[in-house]
Image 1 (cartoon, helix red, strand yellow):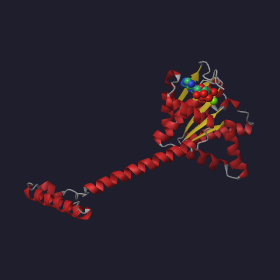
Image 2 (cartoon, protein in one colour):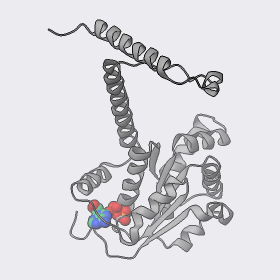
Image 3 (cartoon, helix red, strand yellow):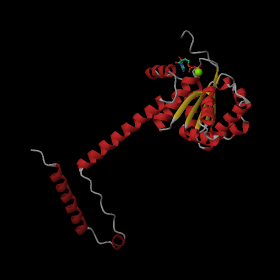
Image 4 (cartoon, helix red, strand yellow):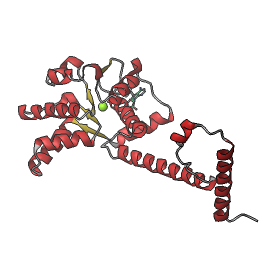
Length: 252
Ligand SMILES: Nc1ncnc2c1ncn2[C@@H]1O[C@H](COP(=O)(O)OP(=O)(O)O)[C@@H](O)[C@H]1O
Ligand SMILES: [Mg+2]
């Protein structure tokens, strides 16, 4: 016959109280203890503990599901998602501990430049790093080609009539990791170039991480950004350059 949980809780309470009284009677009277009485014991029954454990587990599962949704809706193409699935079945390795180096600066809200010719795995590396930031560190993320991102900002500013400063601040706070692909395909007007520089300024100010992906060497990328801005990251900058052959050979 199973005991009613309510009766069991009361029985547990009585047992704990009895132990407390016994301890209080037998413990030597210490003047310091008297002046600083111990805080009252918080009594939880075994049933309640199991319940709390279940609640914590459920919350952790909900949080993980939320993070998976955040990553899935960050703007990745179907091709990148397929590449991620292939990577998961047998993880790829990038030369020079590239993934570790990118992750290290992203965790510290820095900037990572991933440069190299086409097919060397730049976009997938950025996706793997961003996913780790999302799922492992609970950071929000966004992926966009630079052109599309500039168009998105212009839409907010000129169609929706939001002030530039407010747009850039909210973007920097909304996406703690921003991956800008095809950075060297930048065909911006001088005004748009200033806007991109302002993006970096706000991301640095809001302590949000950025990944730039480009086919050109670092110097050329650096020349596309106001040097004083890139300099702000100083210690928190990683440059990953790939010189190996394309992995895409033989693939569609
Ligand atoms: N480290 C790696 N090892 C083997 N294959 C890789 C690796 N990184 C990427 N790939 C594969 O190479 C192809 C090109 O990767 P991608 O990230 O699109 O290159 P990039 O952005 O440099 O053009 C993809 O099909 C991807 O699955
Ligand atoms: Mg790419």
